[in-house]
Length: 304
Image 1 (cartoon, rainbow, N blue to C red):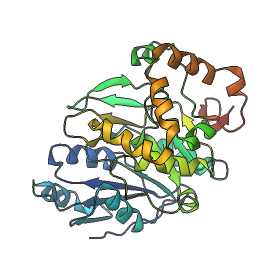
Image 2 (image 1 turned 180 degrees about the vertical axis):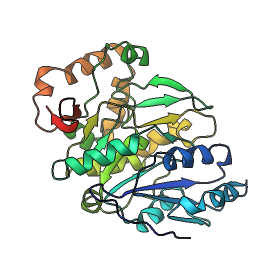
Image 3 (image 1 turned 90 degrees about the horizontal axis):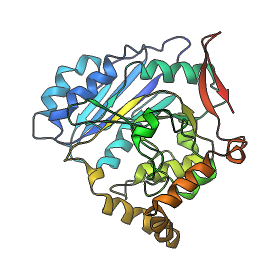
């Protein structure tokens, strides 16, 4: 089902795809987290995989504010995401799993950044953050398995910077350098098309990991020094099956993954490599700048 959307002057249309299957416990909170942003040109697309738990009733309650929704069987979550993006029209794109939520003002931040820096950036991500089963903040997640979230909250760890060559090589997969948080990541349609215009639906767990690798072949990832979303920890999520996630990654990357996994299990080495990643040599790279708000002008700028 479709609804009409009008373009907001000066701001990009943001297309958010919400894939869902039998997630009635969390789905409404996910939808409200997007709709209550008040973003003037949000294209929210819900792709339900044929839920039987009351999810469709939730979707229908919000139908006047949803640009498009379907409920029908699909091959998997990533097939649903491809269906949703295939119907999208926004210049900026992202997806929100039905158990996660956007942080307040996330879309206003993303829209302003892409509007002001439209010729300078192609994808951005916010600070990684975790929420519990009830949606309460647990703090910032880490960028290294050897450093705790407490260190981030205490200001002992700088804003993460994701090195473009390391993204392309597949090093941000959790065993050493942490993850690029999917629900906090947004990109342009031009980058999406350059990277193939789809997520790999032959995968069951690691398609976002593969998508970031393809994105990094075309553009650097810029980090916004604020929270855009939260990853909700709950027992029913696919990401708890880390062994299967890593099996997919290792199959794609080959022998390097086994070596990387062993390194990631050694916390001292993990901490050493994290310090290296934050060194002056790494910061001097021209492709890993962050996006910051200039207080004097209220405009977003790229900082090196």
